[in-house]
Structure formats: C-alpha cells, structure tokens
Length: 161
Image (tube, rainbow, N blue to C red; front, side):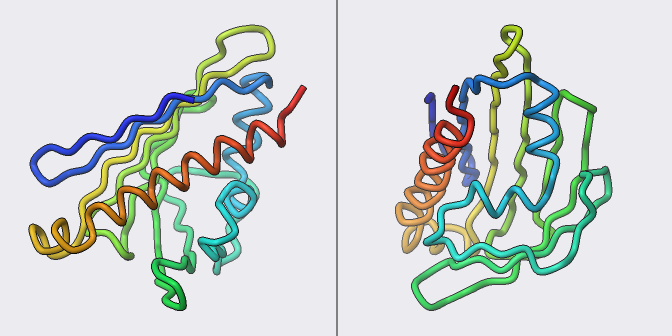
C-alpha cells in the first residue's frame, strides 16, 4: 500500500493506492454500492449510513451518515456525489459534517486482466483554522490515515485470491 499525507495552505491531502486482484467491473460494482462503505470502514469508527441510498451511485446523490469522531461523540455527516465517470472515478464532497472541507476522489484503473489499481485522493480542512490544526491536526490526520490503512487490510482480506 502506498499512502502519503501532505499539507499546504491549511489543506491536508491524503493519497492512497492499492492494487486489488479483481476486475475493473467487479471493483466498480463494489465501490459504487453505497452500503459497502459500512463494510470497509473500521468498526471503531461506529460508521452507519442513516438514509437509504439506492444500490447505484449517481451524480447528485446525497448520502447521510453517523460517524464516531471521538469516543462517545458521534457526528452527522452528509456527502454528495459531485462527479462520476463510469468505471473511472467518482467524487464525494461533504455538504455538512465534522470537516470545514472534505473532497474525496475515488479512481479506478485496470492494470491487468484481473487487477485494478484503486487510488483515493482526499483533500480536507479542519474547522477553526489555525486553532483546529493546533489542537486536533495530528489526531485527525492520524485518524484519517488509520481509516485508509484499515480499509487496505479489509479489502486485501475480502478480495484475497
């Protein structure tokens, strides 16, 4: 797994790459089924979809969640699918939630007959500007990295050949 976290102008960027032993079609079907987000999010995040999205992701789709941001503290989170190119990528952006900004690109590329490279690019900004960075920056960046490291392990196990 390749994972990288950078920060520029108050915006954090996490980039993660993973090769999965599945076809592009299978990857697209799995990752564009909203209920699968529950399956690939670490249990300790107490993540739960709270609306009933259809079984297909589409541009303009709103998905609502509850997510544990701290022990015993949950936050509502609302995202919108703002861009989608079939079998290539989709983007979810926070409309309401714990971040000042959240923009998550999901890219898919066939790299063999039954292999797909999945690249996630997440740009996020913490609330409260410099104070948010000072008091929670390290904690939040570690938590975001943890989510993607956990997702890597969950997906490796789920799609083991």
